[in-house]
Length: 490
Ligand SMILES: Cc1cc2nc3c(=O)[nH]c(=O)nc-3n(C[C@H](O)[C@H](O)[C@H](O)COP(=O)(O)OP(=O)(O)OC[C@H]3O[C@@H](n4cnc5c(N)ncnc54)[C@H](O)[C@@H]3O)c2cc1C
Image 1: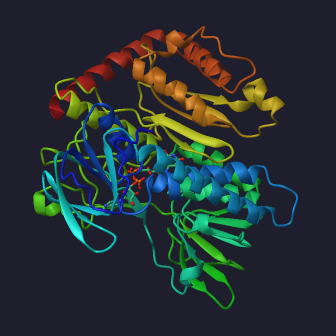
Image 2: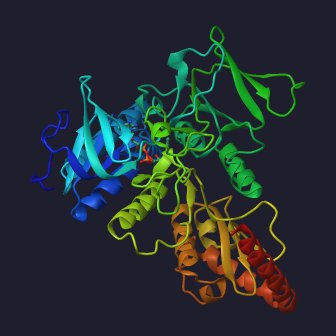
Image 3: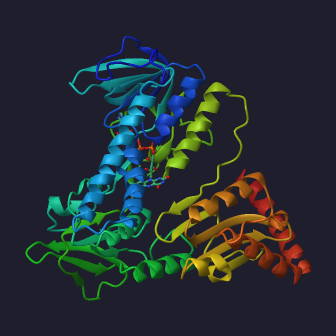
């Protein structure tokens, strides 16, 4: 920690009013940009209206993964589930304090509490907690204000029974029956954790299956694995109303209006996890011409630059948001673009995603439900590797899309314990252009889940060697189509 630069009074107006960069929002994105620019000798003003660390530290990644971990190691005491909820808050608060200590004093960074908005492309106004306002000037302004939970109306549901990710980690008692509206990553992770704590858990998803962005076969497998844990899942349904006298949640079909509504009984809490809304209102974007899409997300180019020169944006408030690692990579891109504007930035980064359920579902790259003609889709059943046998893992798979004859990896989906670690290997291979051919012969420790890769490579080579001529022909016609597509789009 460097005390020389630390702002000792983050609630007061700092003496300095001119900075190299002003950053609005100190979540994953804002922090990574601030620390990086500070290390390059820039003077940075970092503005935060609530808690340093943003959603990830306070109401997102950290408490959710902490809850998943602690609920797994539940003690035998009757109040163990409630103690777990308390423990998660303690761990979260400790990390928040640590980040405040470490990053509040980071080199070159002046951290202040307040709500920031743009006045022009190089001036921000900061509304302090005491109601006063002041302004600061910066050569560059970086917007990183994150997102908020999308709220949907559920008729009759009292406010104290309506939870989002903001309230769920504040629970002091484990719900008897937790209904979770939304079968995406947040909803499913919480389903696993609260089921482990002993709650009855019902998930309601409007789409045909959970994690609708995943390959349908992967969604179906995860659905099955969660159902085996006692989680009840209603797909193709909306939650529409709540009857407080009977604690009933009413569900309606999302596909067929004529279907009788379903009634879930004794539901004491409802967690709504149906997506995010970018925090872009009240930032003064339209006034200075910063372009947003129809959902209100800020549109940026591959460097993180907005439609206004000198104004940058990253993380959940942009069209490239959704995870902490996306926010961090765009933070690095913005730092590079400010510090070394002439250095090439490279293509769009890969976007691995992980649902940290048990088993985990991880994916990377492009895998349309219907595989293109010139692509070989390899599916490995997890039971083909010995680690699944020793660990008694019932459901696991790896699905890889590879383009022959080059062996280029286009996308991968993995369901297994630690799938998030396995997908990192794909991330490296895809970024550095390691083909599936080069992967052949790579030694993977036995018995690890990574052995699914060895099986996938061997299956791919067998599939290709059966029809070398056909694959080469499809590759060359596919290549011609892709080149034409590129030229046409330009
Ligand atoms: C329950 C849950 C679990 C998650 N788990 C994971 C996970 O395991 N892995 C993963 O990669 N991602 C996860 N995410 C997503 C991750 O939390 C976000 O993608 C990430 O936090 C985005 O970072 P950000 O910097 O864009 O925004 P945030 O972290 O939300 O930070 C934005 C900050 O800006 C502040 N702010 C807003 N407006 C202003 C203003 N006008 N002035 C000053 N400050 C302002 C906010 O108070 C906030 O602190 C999870 C999300 C949730 C909800």
